[in-house]
Image 1 (tube, rainbow, N blue to C red):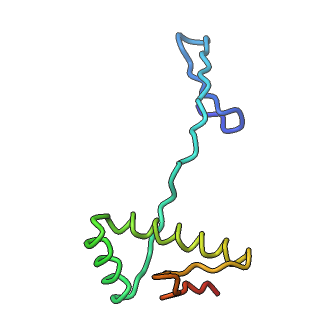
Image 2 (cartoon, one colour; image 1 turned 30 degrees about the vertical axis):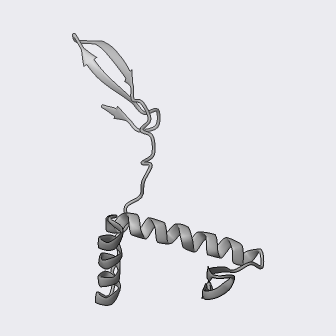
Length: 96
């Protein structure tokens, strides 16, 4: 019998004697699973970036999320994230 309130299991042993075993709480999963629907173009871009970088698609998405996080945080500070060549801004990442 499983007692949900106390997280203990009680088993009858040898007639009327009972043994109580305390269940160890399970640690929460360290990762979360996500289903993602992409357009064909987005999927092709993701696949190309993975192929060219030698990473898998999940690693590319994690890296992209990290870059987005940096750009977002810097925007809140009034800064910009840009590609610079010879002290000239070539492209600027604009986060709305």
